[in-house]
Amino acid sequence: MTFPGPPLDASDSHPDGELMLTDFTSNSSDLGWYVVNDNVMGGRSEGDFEQEQGELRFAGRTNTKGGGFSSIRTKPVQLDLSNHAGIQLHVKGDGRRYTWRLTTDARWRGRQVSYWADFETRSGTWSVANIPFSSFIPQYRGYQLDGPALDPGQITGMGLMIYDNQDGPFELHLASVHAYSADAR
Image 1 (spheres, rainbow, N blue to C red):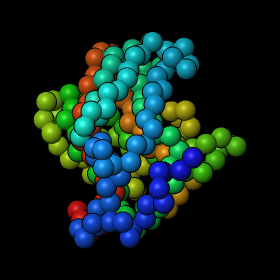
Image 2: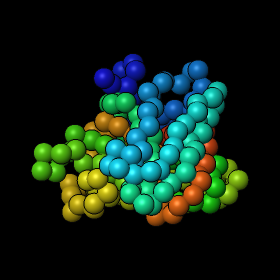
Image 3: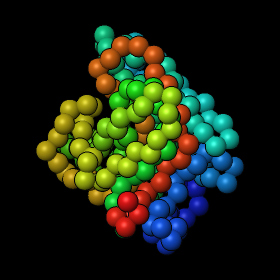
Image 4: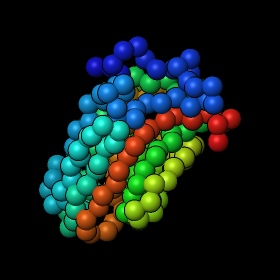
């Protein structure tokens, strides 16, 4: 499965160098979000999401006894973001640290590598998080790898995760996801 419609590339960008990936409106592609919590490995965290017109709300409770994470991910996509510098998120947070997750076809010992980059939120305040592609660290099941480096021309999935080693409730509102160019920052 790929991104609904033709693969996105720089030709779909706005004049300011931004490429809107989703804004959770009826005009935006449905990326097929789904939940993956730490119960896949015996954990006790709970998380889910609600998508309304113009916003996605990701909320739940983390429990560090047995995993400590909750995440939502897109179904497989096909994105060529090689003409962009990073991901821009418009979020209203709760003061906790979150992680944006990307996947490609990259493998480590035959298993899919994911790329993580953390961003901070301010409690109850809308803000913009610009996450440069150079900030994404290769991971396998939470373990940092030495490589391979992220290839933004081969994005196959995206996700939002909370994995900040804290117990308790979390809530993040996501209004849009863009790819931004170096000129747009």
